[in-house]
Length: 174
Image (cartoon, rainbow, N blue to C red; front, side, top):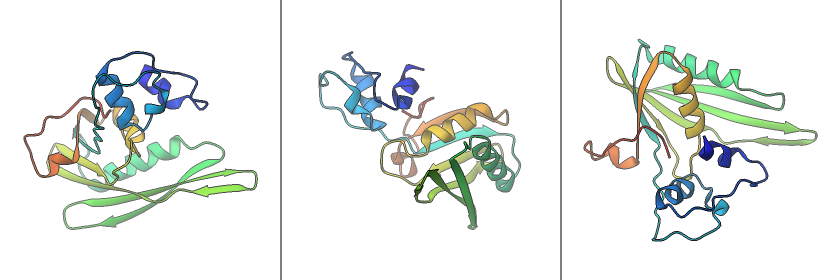
C-alpha cells in the first residue's frame, strides 16, 4: 500500500528514507527513484515485469477483452477517458487502448498501448504489454486482475519469460 501511495502522490511529497535495496529496485523499476533520499547500498537494476499469467474463468479472448474494456471505462473520470481498438491474430487478441486527458484548452492524447492477450491453456491466460519503460499500464492491469472475480493467482514476469520458461514469477508486478 505504501508503494502505491508513493506512486500516486501528485506532488512527489511521499519520500522513501530507508536503505532496503528491494525497495530501491521497486522504485527504479516504476520510474520513481527520485523519491529516494539516500543512494542505494549497491547498484540497482530495474526489473520491468510486463508479462502476467493468471488463471481465468473467461472462456474466450473476446470475453476477457470486453471485461478489460469495461474495467477501464469504470475508471474514467470527467476529463480522462479511453478509446479502444482490437486486432485479432491467429492465436491471440491484440488489444489497444488510448487515454485522453482534457483540461480547459489543454488536450493530451496518449499513444496506444498494445496489450497482447492469449490463452496458455484452457484455464490460464497470458497478458503481455509491449513497453520497455517503467510500469506503463502495469498498475491498471494489476488492479483489474485483483478486482475481477474471474481472474486468479496472477504471476508477474520480466521479458526473459518469453525465451526462458524457467524464469521465476512474482506475485506483484514491481
